[in-house]
Amino acid sequence: MTVLKSIVLFGVAALLEIGGAWLVWQGIREHRGWLWIGGGAIALGLYGIVATFQPDANFGRILATYGGVFIAGSLLWAVLLDGFRPDRWDIAGAAIALAGVGLIMYGPRGG
Image (cartoon, rainbow, N blue to C red; front, top):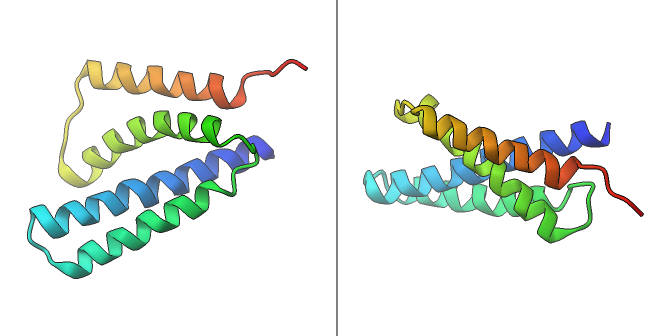
């Protein structure tokens, strides 16, 4: 149950951080205005809060793991919202990053 909770929290964190950054991007680069930028800033702040609910108490491990989730999540976001089509190298890189996530966060720890 702890692993499932952790995975869900990483998913929510990715949605908030990637979505927040996308909203800021849209507000500035696509000239959509301050409401988009403000919404992005709020989402980015909430991302920081969600990360604190991870069951593991090691900040460095959580952030390192989230880096891999961010890589894969960013590519998925781009596919779903921006029409991006990843090539085999994008997919391979994301798979390697997610394998690293599994090792860093959920690998067996001795003593």
